[in-house]
Length: 116
Image (cartoon, rainbow, N blue to C red; front, side):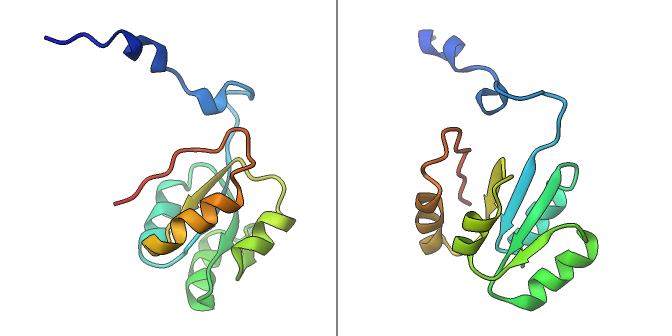
């Protein structure tokens, strides 16, 4: 059996070290139809503060469940105007992931990216 000595050093919620562990995250949802809608449902225990999609039908559907969320059509406007974001869920087509993540690469505690 191979033992990985570095595994012990990679434990813990590094994103949450600087804040109260009992507080809720402020999440921005980019892409609100299909996978984005189910991601928003899974994140519903947190504060979803912003919705962003070019399709207004998708944001309108989610807005009925998240009345306090601000709606944007362009992710650049979302990042420029919404300053209270702790995490971003990007549920867009694959060719847009890097563009959106690169826009906020200046975040010191940029979160985890996942693809299907």
